[in-house]
Image (tube, rainbow, N blue to C red; front, top):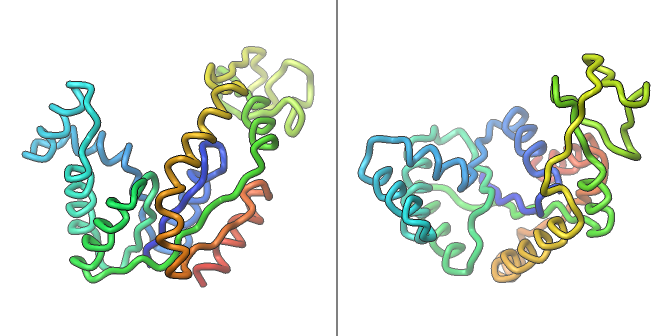
Length: 214
């Protein structure tokens, strides 16, 4: 089974992709991860990616398509693909169709983790972690049992990501909507788009995804 998993930063795509990998014999294909992986490889494609990235230019659709083609070529046919970050344009969507067909695959589902923007801002801006062990907390939803002391390791040193602020989160939401707008109509016409409440608990979202893929 091959799916596209959509959702803005903070919607829980990474967590759910990991769950899908473990529960449904799937592999997450993140364009960002593949670029870094390809760049390290001593191949012609790897050298092309390195040259483009070093120049500061955007990686072309042709290169991204070549990476996905190569990745699917190396994957066992029994392993499904979770596409994350691709496609982002109508041209890429049609290119993905061609690549999947080449490998005897088809796109089964496009699943969007739908979020409420204000709730997502609250979720992201309120999170912080222990600087020592990395345990995660939230100002309102998961506070430390003892104020200022990590429940896990007892450290009193905490940190927040500098980009976990309202302006950045809302900008990300705008970018996400701009990137998904061109591709959703393509898949809606095929009747393969499903939306899941990304603001639900992790277990509830996992159960919803399991129901879609069952």
